[in-house]
Length: 279
Image (cartoon, rainbow, N blue to C red):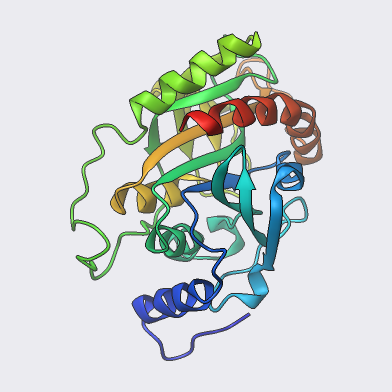
């Protein structure tokens, strides 16, 4: 990993952009952030160029065993894509700005659409495990913001508007594609991001429901904030791996969440492969 000692954040970003810009294959239109259970989507990329995060200047390294750490470049469904195969999390010890570093770099390489996927825990009692939630809104509960600090005006505005963080046309495309495939249990909802790594208590589950969240996770929103700041269109898709009733709470086992996300992965992959040509 390139430490970038003594460099400003802007200089670190620019070094990573320059490194990737030397590779002529790096002109992605769409960034796909692959969450738990979706790593296999990289196998469908045509003429892939796989670059380990460790080779890219200043890219943080994923420490989560279920997340590979590769940037995969190529063509998918006729679109030039950059797949982030493995993500970073605030709970790993990274700042929110480091977590969103790959999105910042890829936005400066020309990507204009970001598709962010993850696995989450259901809060809405109407959800069942395996539900695919199309993000309509979010609640950001991390104690750090990737846009904190000096603003680079060339990257985006000091105070970006978040009245519509998720592109409404992309949401409609996702629902229409789900209907075309005959997929049931594809719903809209609000995602809340908590710091982790401790999983939520029954009282916290009640609180998160009370403030309007339909699903909870520990990822994705730093990337969303940077993507919106950079002027990208964002589509968020979350696989609800489990649903817990705070009045009949059962232990949440991370291995079970990863397994459930893996089982739902093929449905989400099928949906993504139909959505991509329409973006």
